[in-house]
Image (cartoon, rainbow, N blue to C red):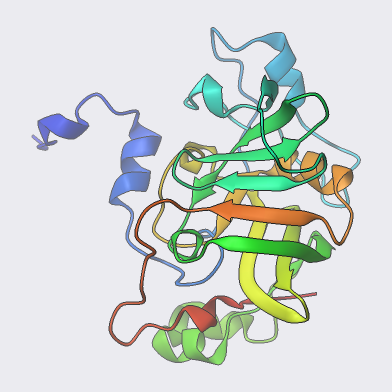
Amino acid sequence: MSFVPSAFANLPFKRLAALLMPLLLAACVSTRQEPFEAARAPGVSAEYLAMYGDQPDETYPLPATDISEVDPKFLRHEVSYPTREAPGTIVVDTDNRFLYLVRENGRAIRYGIGVGKQGMSWRGRATVGRKGTWPRWTPTPAMIARDPEKNRPWAGGMQAGLDNPLGARALYLYQGDRDTMYRIHGTSEPWSIGQSVSSGCIRMFNQDIIDLHSRVPTGTTVVVLNRGTLLKPAEGENFDEFTSDSM
């Protein structure tokens, strides 16, 4: 008989697996992603089933996202959000796992996010320096040296697609001409939204990053809030390794 600690006894299986999953990719990406089948879970509204439904007209047809185990507060919707930031600004609240796109009249579109190690290592203001649609992913030399069996096959770059760790879209944050190495990108691991995860920057449902990507131009101001102590690299670790993508 298997033993499950009482603290985890009531967690859904996929979320439990996620919390126990070891670090697989020390990069600004999630672990290798698999597409989910359409969810028809009781209690999920038709509005959200449509919002997170399949998108067959994408370059790589996107299946529906399974939101059956996601806290509804992390699903996309408009909220009251009084702020001094100008409409059109992106505000990333890493502590509460939300991303806001500021609108007029004290409103904002709120998206749920997952926050990885790199996501907790920086705060400040930046701009969207470039945008990627179905971006490629390329491991750095340091990543290949650390885990050649896993990463060397992708030394020339992983093609875009449903299994690519950056998902359907990516926003690359810059300060002037300097790449901050901070990314906002997609994921096909819906259980990770609303969670602190072992690797990566700021991840969103693929349907949500597609929506955000369509609303913001290059040059958009991004404010990253991180109220706690910034995460520092462990001994022998270099957060500069998190520049693991290319177009």
